[in-house]
Length: 197
Image (cartoon, rainbow, N blue to C red; front, side):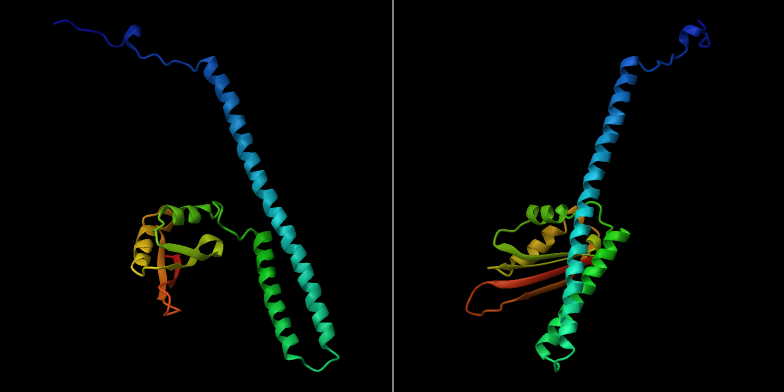
């Protein structure tokens, strides 16, 4: 029987240090990657700033309109039409103030954007149905859409197909309404609303 001493230097595993080419490649790729990420974040931030400036301008315009409407309404007797318009402007102003607050405080939590919703709707489209309205709310936490179809049976199939999309995995479809508004036409209207489960 022959014995082999595995503790000899020739039998030990040798660690190979990183080559100069590998180190140079890492030194080039890591800063380049970080620069690209920084640039993308800069573009996102710039677009949010533009949107904030637009909302601020609209806010100032609406504030001026409300002030003008209030000033014009003082000396005259109450005009129901003007009063209703002021109420609508106040509601719109409050909505814009909430949006402005959300933008300035960073409450918009959806950092991925909304293109995944559009892509999911397109990927799982069922021929014979079409979307007429979409609404995404709460930073992407709620989703609703309306559409039309010639065949009512296609709507549940479309809804089932959407359940196979990853973006809708944590959603539950809370509202499904199907109705035929005009009995003379074969078109039906449907409304679907979701919320995080």
